[in-house]
Amino acid sequence: DADVTQTPRNRITKTGKRIMLECSQTKGHDRMYWYRQDPGLGLRLIYYSFDVKDINKGEISDGYSVSRQAQAKFSLSLESAIPNQTALYFCATSDLGTGNNEQFFGPGTRLTVL
Amino acid sequence: AQSVSQHNHHVILSEAASLELGCNYSYGGTVNLFWYVQYPGQHLQLLLKYFSGDPLVKGIKGFEAEFIKSKFSFNLRKPSVQWSDTAEYFCAVGNFGNEKLTFGTGTRLTIIP
Image 1: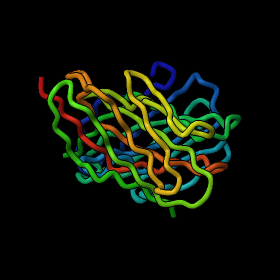
Image 2 (image 1 turned 30 degrees about the vertical axis):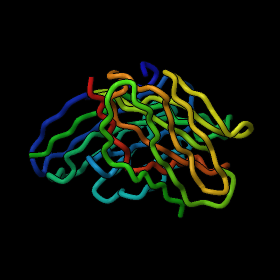
Image 3 (image 1 turned 90 degrees about the vertical axis):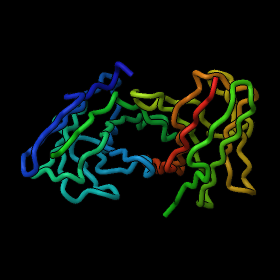
């Protein structure tokens, strides 16, 4: 979905490095989410934000932090990457106005931690 | 906390076969239900959704799903699959007024030509 973009699309890094994944959206949505996808585990919520001043932990927030720099931007950081954070990471957005939970996904970032 | 179960982890079918993928959820209140599809190497795309009204919903590419409230189910169906349906399928549930979704673990569908 071209309205939700993620950078980088692929990243290989080493254990202990700090990594930032970025998400931008042009949908005008208030709500943004970060998920990780692992084979056999589906999508698990890391953090979510309902507006610029609202940040909430998801089910697997340990080892991650986020920043909502503006309505359109939501960044995910790994302060000290470890190999079990190797995964596919997705950003998503949803519209407060509809109240129907539908989320729109970015193309994903494949992160490999060596 | 709500949960979503997709019991079929990997389904292999021949082209033209009929498909049904199971999805069950645990939540007693008003729910919004979704099926997302992820084609190889791509991001998640919405296949279909149910918010209210007719429990039989039709989505893109000939897919449909039926919401059966008494069974807490939202199974995905397609009468005749194609090779291009090879993908991973995720069921997701949200409860009205809560902007989070809970995803199932996904079902990998492989269609043999």
